[in-house]
Length: 262
Ligand code: SAM
Image 1 (cartoon, protein in one colour):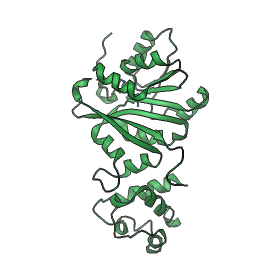
Image 2 (cartoon, rainbow, N blue to C red):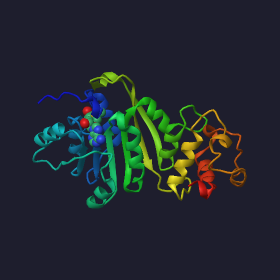
Image 3 (cartoon, protein in one colour):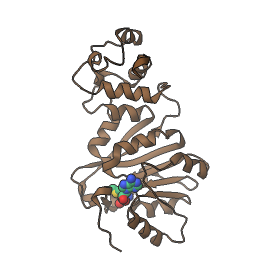
Image 4 (cartoon, rainbow, N blue to C red):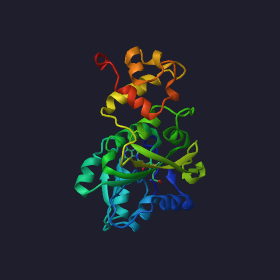
């Protein structure tokens, strides 16, 4: 059964067996673990994952691919969810499965940021995540303060997870070949948070505003959110730029947001 790749679903299928093996080695799935693959596509990773575990769930939006998976994996223990991963309730799946999930995926690149944000909100029911995305996006996810790539995506992910960038994958490993390099990375939700963030929506607001104009100072970007007294109380120099601030400093600043601005 052939399948014509759909651009709107970000379909670039893995065809390089050595890359599939490298991903499997990074995930190292064990029997008894609750695995979830986002976007199984034609099953390149699914087949290998299913060989290592008795509990594998896949979340796929494309009905044609779901039909193909149902056909190929009939009679196996694969649980196929025909759903949009952006709306999928991973918390409910973890509850039904009886514990936290390991999530894997060669993700659709066109929804990478909203999908990561959706997963970060349920990071407490995730053991770890192994994903492939565009190299440029992965660099942003893992970037430290002071780096040109450091920004909202880095902070929103690093506030919840430890990030490790594992290896790069060239366009030739996929069919059709994407235009850009890709990277595989691991995200492990913090067991002990490096910082206390009591209100994530407030934290996100401060981070978004602080990076609105990268070259401007915090005083300028946050003028509607943090007063001069707030900066002083947080012990943060308002003439600094967002890209210089650590996660801990952003969390501190978020607790001094003026209430009326919320
Ligand atoms: N895992 C396969 C592989 O490595 O060959 C396919 C990867 S392909 C980059 C992305 C997959 O995600 C496709 O199968 C696509 O249909 C699926 N997909 C796209 N958007 C999705 C969404 N919102 N929810 C669930 N699956 C989605």
